Length: 144
Image 1: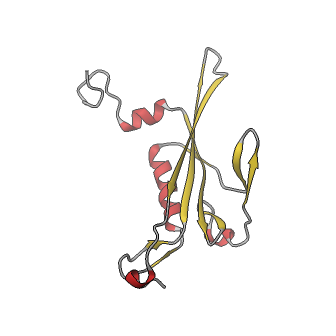
Image 2: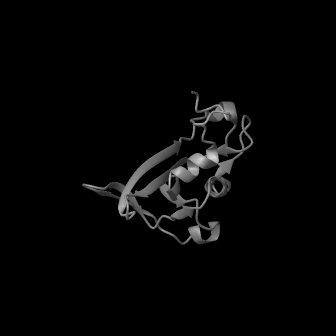
Image 3: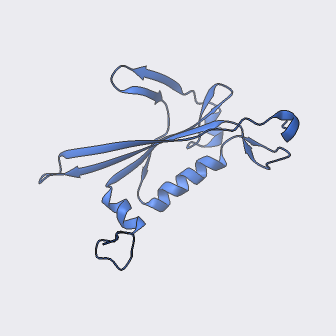
């Protein structure tokens, strides 16, 4: 049986899969621009006064102090948060691209699921996504 076939008994659509994953949290969406971290999930006016601090813990690994965390109630909510973050990133026009991203974007999605008879057993997965800004040659793109 093919689970991608909607007529199949084992089929699970996108929203069903999203519900099966349990609790979702967009832990942070950060832009690295000119060696500075910008929180793309907070209000652009508040961002001017915020100072994010990246730290390294020997057991936890890299984490960012002061980054915005958002609970995602649905896949649409998660996508709208990512869309909001994309509208607040720094872009400039070049001859080749009307909205060329100037910084690298990194976001972290945390998926948690509770199980067991008393729902005390928690399993979690962390997924990192990165959108690296391309290197454009200034003469070709006429970047400003």
